[in-house]
Image (cartoon, rainbow over all chains, first blue to last red; front, side, top):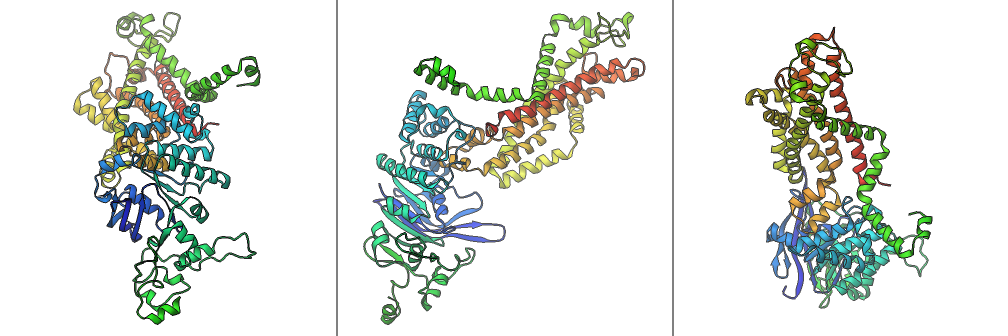
Length: 334
Length: 304
């Protein structure tokens, strides 16, 4: 806990609707160290965004609740922090970059004002000139001429808007950057540009970054460690090397890799993982992936697997690697 | 910037001018867009002319002499060079009374909007932003108020408080709050789900700042239209109240009470009723047209 910047332990988050309770996060464990880049991968609905919102304590009012668990930020539990404390933290120590830059900038304020606002909020008493200088500096840092700070968001292109959002996020020199699919709304060439810039700025500002994405290629490029999420929990975690080079994987991870087109081989169709995610309103006693798992065992439907360490950094939540009822079963499975 | 100007001036100068042009652009573009809208410009010009006439009345009329004193020898004069709109049953100049009546109508209209906009914006924004119980309680209270017809409520309040100008403004302001707060609430609800509101919260912005800096300005369009309509409606309400004798009382000139006096003479001297009637219609119409045009012009998303 002490050496980690952020550590989420056994987090359960539910969304309550009129007639259902949806288990969005179901015992999530995640940690990130200083200056580390963590890639969080998983399909739609796995709880990636919910995780980010929980850290910011921005779950929708009266709908989303963190029922159980802890989120330690430099040793203090964010779930117990007051709203006023959280406000000081947001934007200042933890920043978030949203998915769609088109809508995450306020259309009626100039971009300069929007960057200045973050600075103003977190440095009360700072002189106007000082803030303006910092705004100019941030704009130049993300490669947009400072003169353009008097323009409105609609006068910028998508990639430029996302760079302004990044400038806003980094303006207060945060320790952690939460990037929720920052490039999904951009086209591929701009994606690469923005990611490269985020990576180098993260280095420059000495920050950690949690990158939420669907794109394993992106993860391989810029992440130090990876967490693979499925149905509200992390089912495999490790360094990038563990995930991309190790032999042993969770069947879901193997499935994910199987769904990536390989340029070197001639394939007619990709191999998607069959089936759908389990209904998030139901509570399964066993492994949540069991239904879709090609290597399902009888045990999987009864017992929830625990995280099993493969080495110091690599962990997998699967009975294939865990404690077994009998040794013969293990050999058969492997 | 056209090519000719750039070529004529030194390079550095051109860059500087581009910068200046962009700096000015915010209000300039709004103005340019408003200017293109003929109906709105008509409303604006008319409203300005009316305001100017009303404010400068003392230059060419004497309030006591022309609008109040009775000249019984000069009753029911037809329009002439001396009395442009003729005189009424007490021999007072109709145009002078219309102009001084406009002072009251416009002042009450603007004062009313201050009351109802302030209260309505606070209530509506709080209800929408905090939602849940806050929303429920505030809006049910507003529903109770809304169930009482506007004019009836103003009449009740004036009757209870006494008919002074201040009470009139208060009564009309209060009776407009429910409508205003509902408009504000609905437009705020539309903004609240936007990602930039969430992004603002993720930057650590306080609720107060989010409401006043990020949400309300974005919700301005419908509110602005409502504001101009409310001013217009207030003009009508004050006239109605005066018409039935609860608003501004004689001999103070007021459009509604002038109409009320003129109705008995409608058959023989229709111009007495036409003058304040047209004044009411023009005031209301110019404000409505201006409001509509402003909404289009102020919305940066419609910029092209």
